[in-house]
Length: 163
Image (cartoon, rainbow, N blue to C red; front, side):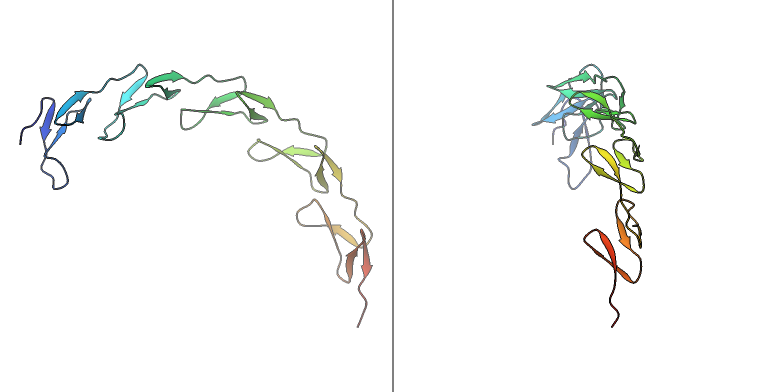
């Protein structure tokens, strides 16, 4: 077995008997230097292109291009994309303000709004839930249900007939 230049021997039952030094990759029976673009770093992997873009850059056409952050955005945890700040939503390549109507609030993630308890979403706003006599706001908070001994019928609570 011949070990190519920029390679080293390995003793493994699943390998070809040699591997390439860091910064080189196997191409046929030789080790070829990995072309590392600007803003990239080498990977310790025999698979793929052998490099990855630095945080704040993404691969495009064999290069690492900077990620453009629009106003009210931040770099995502992955480092190769962006997300909108709380109170804004992604709209194409921008972050647009989430308009929160009266009687509503931003959800936990800040990416959408929800109506306060006792209100329901209707056409981009929050309208009050009309609770008839002998009823109460249900668990979800956006509808009502009848008290025990009553049942819902035509928007009212009627007495359940005794047997």
